[in-house]
Length: 153
Image (cartoon, rainbow, N blue to C red; front, top):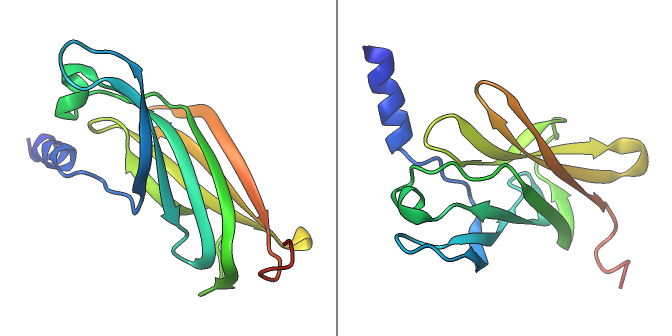
């Protein structure tokens, strides 16, 4: 019984990422509730100053989507860019989660993890969706070579 109550509380508490919505486009009209759409969000890497990542992902509309009960699709796209001098505030851990957002009521999340390819001096960001029961194979990757700011201009 306590487990059931804990799951309900977890479902009611939104898992918020640090993303800021940049824009959205409607993809399907719904008579009741919001339309299905694709949203574009931006977030800064919390441990790497000078890096911003942009995510595009589907958001389910309709009545369930409007109430936060719908399960969003597992597809997402990511593009990370150097937006200033890159400074790492502490040692980076490969596979560290830098962004996470719930995409269903309880069991599914979309997350971005970071890797550092030291021989090539490149940061790699991978976005994927996972489920408690089974992982989602849909994924996307982006890479940023760590260069002195202004060197590529």
